[in-house]
Image (tube, rainbow, N blue to C red; front, side, top):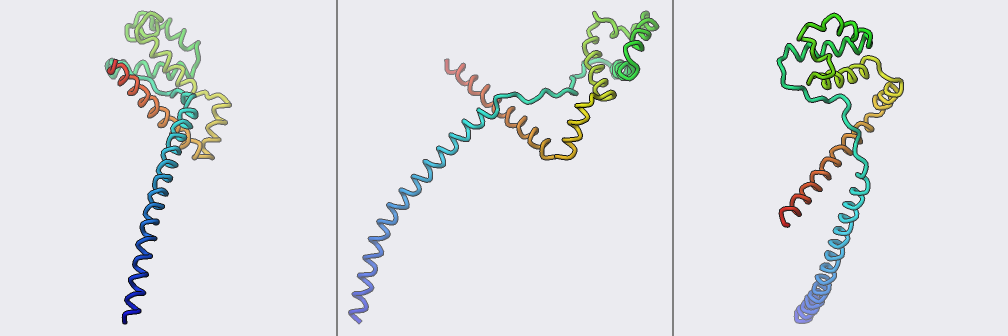
Length: 176
């Protein structure tokens, strides 16, 4: 029995020596892996900053509605829709017919609602009478849905990066 116990003691001592060496090598491996991971994150941040230099395209069909009554807003929208469909001649004839009507004052260039009306007119014209390249782009986007997802992801990353950048600038201003 003594030989067996001596063998087990020797085996135990060897395993402890290997464990000590193993712990040191494991700690080295963890440190190397951590430094590699930090370096990768740093490179990713730099790559994101490089990739996100160009701002995403502006939304063409978003316009903030002014605070006016629902009836007046509907009048402006419907007028813009009809002018977009029927052309500028319709606009001039409408201005001549309704020049005394205060409900159509937004057709005059000096009115506060004129800019909103022209913006709506541009948007309705793009939708009702689209350009051929716009139709082609929509066709490509319909076939390839991943393109739309990539654009949305790029926009979200752009907004996130810009928010982070503005927060950093605010913190720097507060420190000063």
